[in-house]
Length: 219
Image (tube, rainbow, N blue to C red; front, top):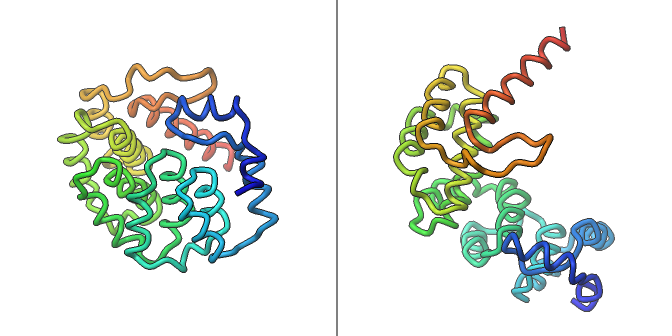
């Protein structure tokens, strides 16, 4: 904890706080610290218990994802209120845990929109890697009915899933594009030069175009 405190940078904290993250540790330095510590499950659990954002991010990097029980991860997810801790926990721990599918289903139906957004993240991954476990038409029904009025983080996760369906599955692409056009979610989101807009129709079109270009280059 003392070492983490020594890495605190006011300018980094200022930038992070604009995105809802209450820590000032440069993530490259945090990853370097994690690399030095290597995997230490006991230390990871103690760091998590501090309730400090930088410590929890470090805990995620040095833990053993498969060592957590289902209920432990459920509690941790509900405690992880800052966006970076929430995202890292889902991406680096939950997705690698044997209980991930059960948690995905449980969280997707949770009334807490932040918890529900954690269920949509692995769902989006399955759209690309394991679509056979999903009913894509039903997912589009839910997105069409609920995304427009969903709170920010849940809306972002649902929109990502919508785009992924359109990108990966040509048979659902027209409907995914149509839903995006009608709901207009993230249509006016500010996008830096060189970045792809998160507005689903633009996102889908751009990624499908890239896939076609890559296929041509492979030939």
